[in-house]
Image (cartoon, rainbow, N blue to C red; front, side, top):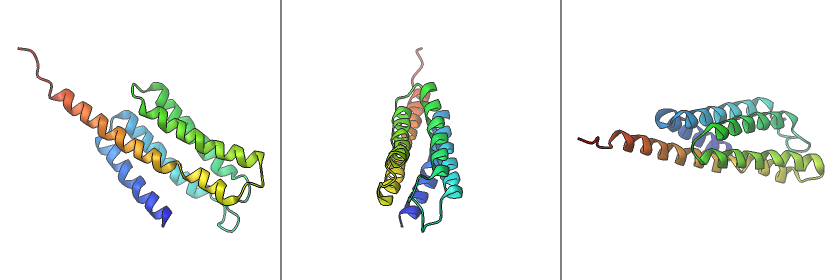
Length: 144
């Protein structure tokens, strides 16, 4: 159920970001969609998933982190920093597994997946606020 819920949220939030968002929201949405698609392609078989360091997932997570950090460094808004920080937290999950190969597979998998939901929530709120700000700017009365 959780993967279905995640992909439903991803589709809804990404569609909203592409529809109402500015450049930052659209780029972050594209990175989220691309990262999720790439993650599906590199997942280990379920029987061995999370048992050892997931190199393919690590590479995808590093690419997603690079995308989020790039947006955060160029953005005039604060929310992309939160997204990049949460993705960094996800990426640290790989470091923990590398340091302690005996880390429980469930803990490793949860560490990698958990922060995806708050990232989508922050993207949705960032899109909503960006759209509202642009809408308000269009309705500012010009001096006579």
